[in-house]
Length: 269
Image 1 (cartoon, helix red, strand yellow):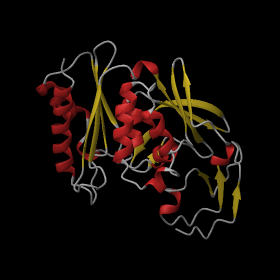
Image 2: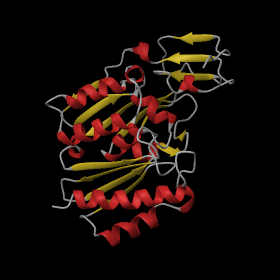
Image 3: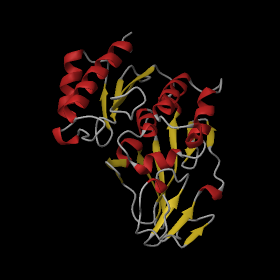
Image 4: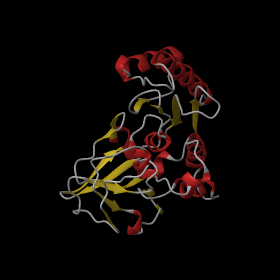
C-alpha cells in the first residue's frame, strides 16, 4: 500500500516526538497493509537498534522490534526452555506468512495490530508476558493478556509505544501445549488456544483468535471437563466471539470448547 499522505520519516525515532498524524514504524507489514489517509509522518523504531532478545536470570526480554525470524531462531536454540520453544515454534508457524514477512514483521507489530488471530499475542499472553509501555509521561507495565482490548485496539495512549515484552522464567518451566484451527489448511487462525501447567500444579488456559481479545482462565489444579466447560461459558461473553469471513462465532465457540478439552487431557499427569 502506498501511503501517499506521508511527508516525512523520522529515523531513528525517540519517545516524545509523537504528534497527531504520526505512526510508530516497526516492520511495516501491518502499517502498509491498508489505506491510512490520516498519516502524515512515520517514526522509525527499527533504526533505534534495540537488542532483539535479552536473556536474564528472571526471564527473557523481547524487544518490540524483534522480528518473527529472530524469535524463531531463539526458540530453536538448545538452551531455550522447552515450554518457550514448543509454544513459540507453533505460534510462529500459525503466522502463515512467507520467509520475507518473517524477516520483517515484528513481535511488537503483531501485538499492536491487535488482530484476534495474532499468534504472538497467544504466545506471550500464555506465558504471562508483561509489556513495557513507554510514553511522554514515563513508563508503565501491562500484562499481555490485558494489552489487547478488542479487535484492532490496545491500551496504548497517544504518544505511547510498546518497548518490549518480558516473559518470566517461572512461566517457561512447565508442560505446555496448544491447539490451532482454521477453515482452511493454510488459513488464518479461527481459534488458537494454549494451556500450561504452572510450577504449583495450577492450570492456565489462554484463548485467542476465536475471541476479539485474549481471555485467560486460571485454576489451582487441573479441572475436570465439566468445570472447564462451565468456566469458559462464564468467562467469555456471547459478544466476544470473533465474527468474520474466517469463521462464525458459533463455530469458533465449538472449536474453543473442543480444543480446551484436548489441551486439558494432554496435560493430565
